Amino acid sequence: MKNKLHRLDNVWAGIGLGFLIPILGFFVIFLLTNNGNPFSIFWYNFTHDAFPYDFQMNANNNEMKKNTLILCLILNLIVFYLGYFILKYDQFTKGIVATTLLLVGLSFIFIY
View: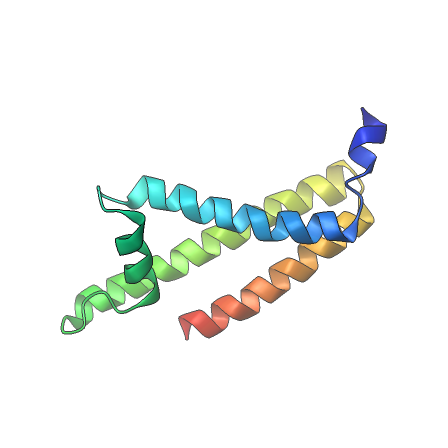
């Protein structure tokens, strides 16, 4: 079992999983908070100002965007913990850290 998991100690496996985990987390958040709306409406509200003339609702929507992005990136920390401290995979965690830093930069641009 250890030999099969040792193949994951690769930078590209870390990069791939570093992109995949936040995307899966985003879909889980959609499933938990969609209120019966399709994904297209959730995505439009996530990428645009959902209420152009109501500043209080926009503030709440912006807070929801921040919390969603933060939760998706925190999931990468869990994968980092498992890879570095439990499995001792150095190369894998390099890919996770690089991807997380890239996604944090993109999230910062997206939020502000």
